[in-house]
Length: 301
Image (cartoon, rainbow, N blue to C red):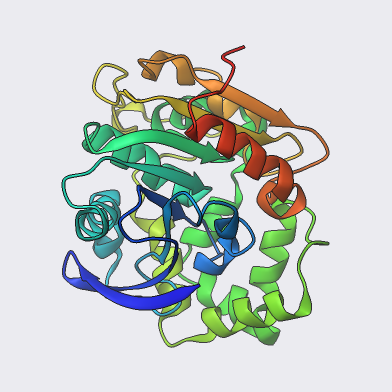
C-alpha cells in the first residue's frame, strides 16, 4: 500500500493507494469517525484490477483541516474528491464506493458529475432526499438520528474527547457492535482523533449539513427543510446499495424512496447479522458483492 499527499481543490489530501496507476480508478470514501485505513482489508482484493485509492477526506487524519464550519459544506467535500479523481484518472470515468458519510459524498458526486462516474456503490449510507424524508416523517429514524444533535452541539468536542476519547468510541458503539476492532485499530483511531483540530473538523461535517433533524414531538417548520427535488438530485449511473440490516443509526426507511431518485434500478443487497460496521464484520461478502457489481454481473432482483 502506498501513502502519498496530493494537492487537490486547494488542500492537501492524505491518500492510501495500491495497484497500477494506469488501471481504472476505484475510489473508496470513508465515513465518520473513521479514516482511510477503514478500507485496508478491502482494497487489496481490487488492486490487481483497479487503481484503488482511499483518501482521508478533509479534516481527517493527515489531510488538511480548514477552519470554520462553512469549509465542510457538501460542495467542498465533493470538489475535493472530483479534483482528486481528475489527477488520478484525468478524462477517464471512475467508480466510487462510499460508506456512511463517504456514501453521502459519493451520492453528491454522482449528482454533480454523472459523466465522470461509471458505477456507484454505497454501503450503509444515504442519499439526502430519502434521508430527509425519513427524518421528517418517521419517528423511529428521528430517534435513531438524535445523535446528530449531540455532534452538532458546541460542547461536543469536550464531551467526546474526555477520558481518551471514550465518548467518541461509545458513539461508534451506538451505531453497531465493535467486536471487530483490534487494539491496533483502536490506537490508530485515537491517534487520528487526537491530532490538533481534528475532532472539530470531523464534527463540522455534521454542523455544515443543511438537513433538518426534528427532535421527538417537535413541530417541523417546513420552510427550513431543504428542497430536495427528485428531478434534480438524480443518480444516473448503475448503482449498488449494500446494507447491514442491524444498523442502529441508519434504518431501512432511509432508503425507502431511493428508487424515485435513480435512473437505473437500484441493486440492493441486505446482509443479516451485520450492522453499520458491515465492512469489518462481513468483509468477504462485501468484497464479493462489490466485485460482482463492478464487473457488471449483478442480478437486479
